[in-house]
Image (cartoon, rainbow, N blue to C red; front, side, top):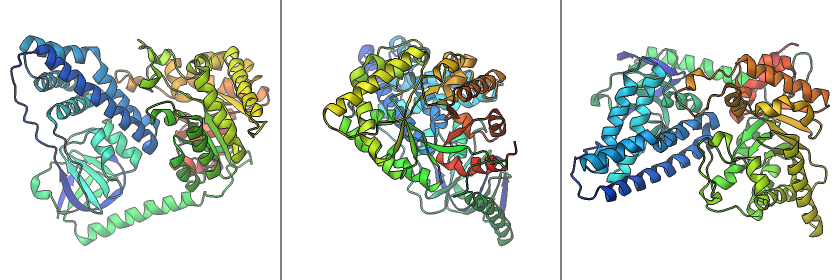
Length: 539
């Protein structure tokens, strides 16, 4: 038995066999080119294809592990859209008259070196991101792609390092742990591993001889055992059983009321992106859907989804939830969610530009199509409609007026719908939080979107890697704002919930309960853990 000591970045126990993952060796030959303009166009075409791939990975990650973790791929996309990055590549092509592959490699080496030489661990980890996005372009240019491993059951991947895109695309039903030589606890791959619940250890020296060996990974201590003996295996199995016992305790939370020790009930809902996620919400005993991100129906379509296709999607969700509440957020695109066929103008600061309800109010035809689809589906379950990115009472009134127009159009055609559908808004801007007392008079509920609220209150772009470590989701200003919103909701006799990432933050749940929050909408796999915390809370 050989014992290797590394650093744990995701806890858990895994026992299986080593499979060494190797990328295709990139033998980039520096070549002189005659036509710099043609070579630049070749680069731009490859870069645009890489951006499309990253958008696809973003949507895949959002569905599988959540929006916060999926931001990794948005950040990678932003790197490829960065002016300095692109100017560097183009300048190298034009001044040195070299092929695009060489220009991308030289740019990546320069930026990665700059990141690596900083003392900031977060910035050091970004060197790997630069290489990842650059490798993607080079692979597209060269036509060579590294094939994902066709792993057998209980495979433990050993690698020099893993890019986030590689981690996401591996078969999680067969791969039970990651062991890498490089990486850090703040690397995006480590974050993904934690999100997927896969044990991961970094800092292990890897050699080809390890391939195929029996291995056991202790993700709690960071120790990796090659050819482990029976004594070690028994200890690790007991450790794993103890963790399973803890999970079983969470299973006991199923079918239990979500209420504090004092008997105050709290709605515990799930966030979903597509109808396919309803099964996970039901399996984890969510009491409803607190946020259906309807924009995924648009993001996954090559053209505007028809009223019929949207109706079918909403109907599936409502029927799947079998009478439980389903809150559908109307179209929220713009900012980091771009859709080509909308032909939106390019913006210097899209997070503060034309997005969400602002688009819907200026593109009534698109908005009404969606509203009619929701209304038609309403007879198949219990639905509420929620408008995002509200900043004024006028916006709410305009949105409600368009909803009434959609109802009138259905009545004229004799199409049935539920007449009394609750309407709520997302509170995710300082403006809506400050005037929440006025907004509360216009709607039936509030849902606080803490992801956007945090970035707007702190003036820190949540996709900007330079400030990522500075974002304090527990900042007093944010918590005070949440408290104000909840109080104003209660004064007006409506309920207030949270559907952002803060709602899944177990360390802050007691404080939110103390504020009187009425509802939490979280990732399906967090429902039982949050229910346990709520049931143990005493007012």
